[in-house]
Length: 300
Image (tube, rainbow, N blue to C red; front, side, top):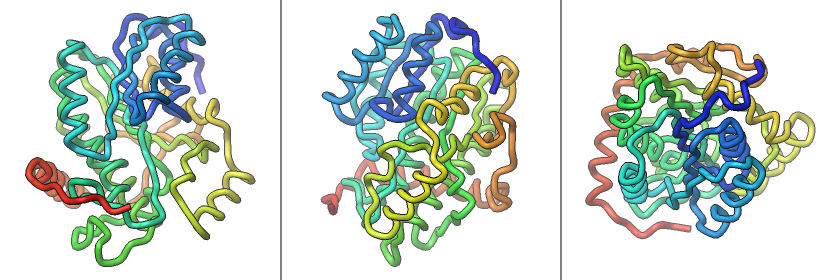
């Protein structure tokens, strides 16, 4: 992994989702250390505020802001995007880092399956709502923190929300594959705009990510973390590389992996299906439009 100049991001506005802990926290902290104006999006105000103050202290940078939103709820995505635009007219780096996995079938207040909403659709909406600001700030970068789990995914258009048959492995893999499709389709749409979009696998990072799983899936995850996991400091390096490396200026529509030390690597064969990714885009837009009118009680 190449070294990044400590002040290479001086004055650039960077938005990092899911930044109160784990990879998101370290990403926000390191961008602040590089001199960036960092905006954190956190789900919990108390945890977010504590992380914000800690980052300010550790980075010696007071330009660390925080917005509060649960990005699995599309209404909150719309609100937080509006709040960002009211405060900032520029956005140079958007890091879609927030993610989650849930063993049990969980539905948001808008009728969306939790993994699909958190890992994909909320990021789809946030990014598209901020595209105009990113274009106005070009050169700008969109960084989607994905997972190797996308290789096990398949888009089940007949059961996107997992209501017929649910498993966390299926739901999580599908959501991460959807994120890769989104990356590639958006990269094509943003050609010649000065805005790039890339995805990455940070490695098997030991964090609180596995807390949403139960039973055998949780046990397998803990065993994998024990024998093959890396700490969040190392796991953040690929995100920082894709977000800041000078040699990636103009590079778009690519997938990077921690195991390749930041070098581009192929994603799954399935992820290059252009027809599926375009169909998924259309379906996603329809789901987002429906969410403005659909409100059902969430199941826990």
